[in-house]
Amino acid sequence: MKKVILTILCILFGPFIAWRGVSDLIKGARSKSWPTVQGTVQSTSLTQSRGRRSGTTYTPVVKYDYEVAGTAYSGDRVDNGDRGTSSMDDAMTTLGRYREGQTVTVHYDPKEPSASLLEVGTTGGNWFMLVAGFAMTGGGVLAGRSYWQKLQSNDFAPSSGF
View 1: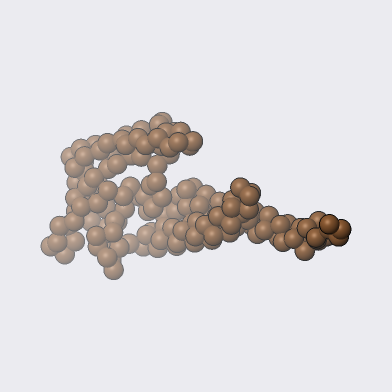
View 2: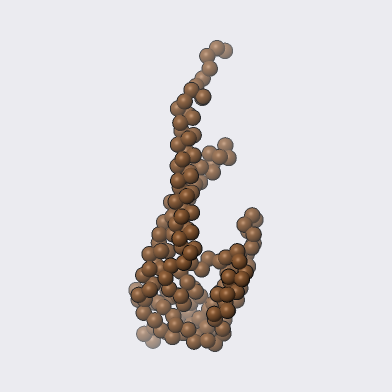
């Protein structure tokens, strides 16, 4: 029964994860053409979260202020994939590029200036989400197909004779 539930979850959530990957890849590609302004780093920090099975995730947080057309904004997105990493070294490398008080180039969405990034383009995490979503969906469909074939076979046919 656990396998059936896992199959259903893969079929339901796999497309969502793949869609998220595609969406992030599109946003990453579009961010390369966003206009820029100068901003100032207000703070940097490293957050840690511990999952029940997945270990510790380290997320570099860089908070910065910037102004577009006379309106002040604050941002905390470094790149289009900043979801954290299992590597403290990678997170510290990202934080090492930014210091409190540093002037930074902020890329902002011209349609929604409150959406901003310090580093544009796509990331490996964007591609990972796409591949993971397709893998989950494909695995779920294959497993579901296998279960369906077993249901249609004689393995589950009622036996004669009481």
